[in-house]
Image 1 (cartoon, rainbow, N blue to C red):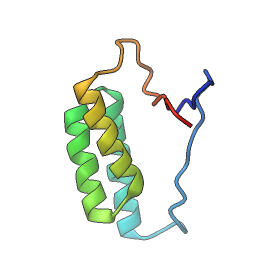
Image 2: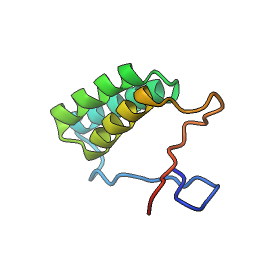
Image 3: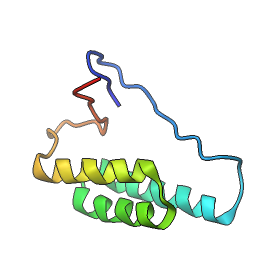
Image 4: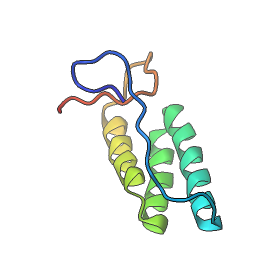
Length: 90
């Protein structure tokens, strides 16, 4: 994401706990698949996937991406979009 007033994006990580567990591995795998679709600007499809992840795992970042997908469906990013979310407020 790019924070307000900055041009260089920053990477944000989610702490999800100790490594291991089949359920956690599925969450990570499904999230990465949805994120790849999101970065291809297939926002409706990505939104459906993120919604399912949010419901299945109670994953907060997936809920955030559902909102972003809805926003981008209504107002798509520019053609040269690099996949980085731009925060408009602090």
